[in-house]
Image 1 (cartoon, rainbow, N blue to C red):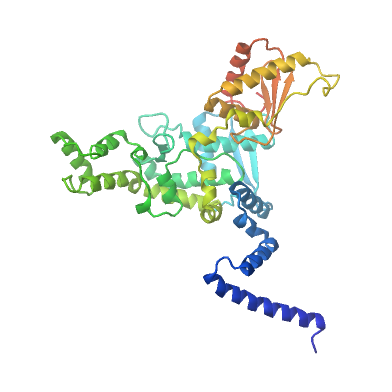
Image 2 (image 1 turned 60 degrees about the vertical axis):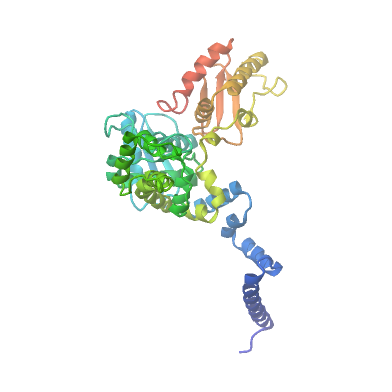
Length: 433
């Protein structure tokens, strides 16, 4: 049977598109900005939505495109069930979270179903509470006694220089860093808060950079005793006998030679490298594995400009007061208010002014706590609504991002006292506090 005119045209076009593609492939090696190559890539990108996040210039939007596509792809899969009993102690609540993220072969991009026992709260706010709680566990540590302390930190060190804990007890729990990676990736995929303040050297190695090219700073060494010993080698001052002995003991413990006149700078760098990179290599490997399981890995490796959004600096996690104020939908004015509303315009203006004053004078920790109380987690939404109502204490409807403030406050001091009490209740009470 002879082909129809349409079939012949289709074969002709297919043949020449293949030839054009081969030509572009050859010439693009010599001329990366070949306009024909760019044209074909634009056609492919528009035809295949899965490539849009790769070509999007804005990192925030690229991350949103990737997450939206991934969640849409898995929206019909088995739901990930997060369950917690608020009537239990903090230790038991954290054990529940660890057990949830310890489960193998979970499709973390699937829909999330949250069950909060001991509280009447339901809806989107409950999901935000879970992710905030989980990331707080990673950031602040476990209230489990593994030694001589009631708080076991999972990352050690000072802000902007945090490194995975080298505790021998935690190292024996092989799955722990894997669980941390799952929590971090799972929260990011679903738009939740992220871990902040991790050392740039650890981030460099975590995402495939060569350990030898990592820029390690003395602040990255969390152990103060080890840091003090290493710092003895920084400079040219003559070492005392005791200082030489301390350096030698540390060097021999890590299979390195003692200090001499010629190897002082080299030994300083090798000791610092071992203290920060070598001692955390197992933990970093497990973190990487956990991130890969949540399917966030392709985004972070192909778009390195998104890594600062995923692991941000501590100073960038708390939004400034201007960012909060510009997103607030303030109470309606007298002309816009409904006639049946009980609160007067004077009450609304006075209480709204107290809130503005609190935001403008709040510390970073207080601003983060306010957003968490208001919305359920520390992520700043596009809009947050304020209502002035007749009630006893400030309340929040986290699902709808509505903060309801009592109209009875006549002084800023009384308002401040109650709002601080409420901000400290986000872990012990949820929903409408």
